[in-house]
Length: 182
Image (cartoon, rainbow, N blue to C red; front, side, top):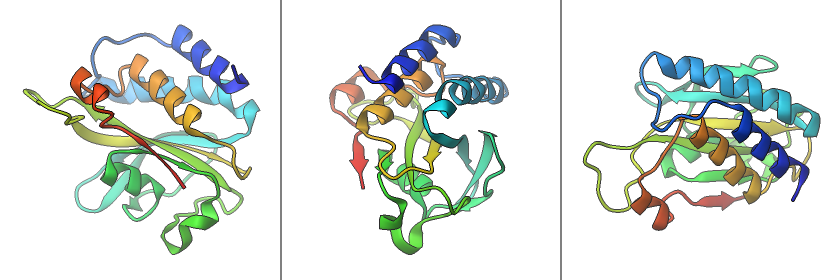
């Protein structure tokens, strides 16, 4: 088990568990708790920044909470966060230079990132529909190749435990939320 996998396990043990996706005004507090806990655990492992972007009206996303430096907000849907939100898939970017002109560089020192979409189940949803994507978790590093699919799954597990995302079991079995590695 990698150091980060142990840290994801630790985060699941320390963050409050929610049996449902937290919505409304309580979501901001849950996001802040999750950001702070993840930052404290992951920054020593080479994570340079992390935060949640929420979908705004139109073609933009707004920064909800982040650590430990400012970031771009609003951002368009053409970057890695927008791609994850649009495709409803986790995205591991091993080298941000591969994204070309579509990359949104809040910090020019960042070299890799992982983005995890956040879902709240649709009422009455059926089939492999993961629900409504309300935003994304974005985690950056100054190191090329800092993240892999295990990081995406670990971050998803932490956010699910904290009540920030959930997909219906039928969607989980259908692998409706996959991982793209670039």
